[in-house]
Image (tube, rainbow, N blue to C red; front, side, top):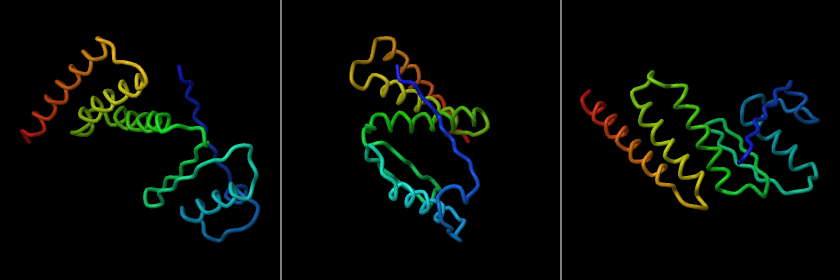
Length: 137
């Protein structure tokens, strides 16, 4: 079983790195963090991916696999589906589709059980029903 650890760091801007950047926007903050990481020596290489347009900065260890990153991403999608439940017309589509993806990722290196396959079929029917309701609008 994979243990998930969430880490959030909120600190005054001038404590992020030594030095002063007069640009307090997202791009400036991301630049400060990336420069800080690049200026320090670590025991393992890390990967940094930024999506400034969406204000997202991702930092991975070199040992994080695409599968572990996909699991983290589907966790975010599931959070959205949980938080929007019944408040958005597409929530049921998102929820059931992401639950299918989560099930597939959990057994990526093995096989889906008969119960998991059955649950996927059930969720596909829920998706179909949701699509039928959406198409009525």
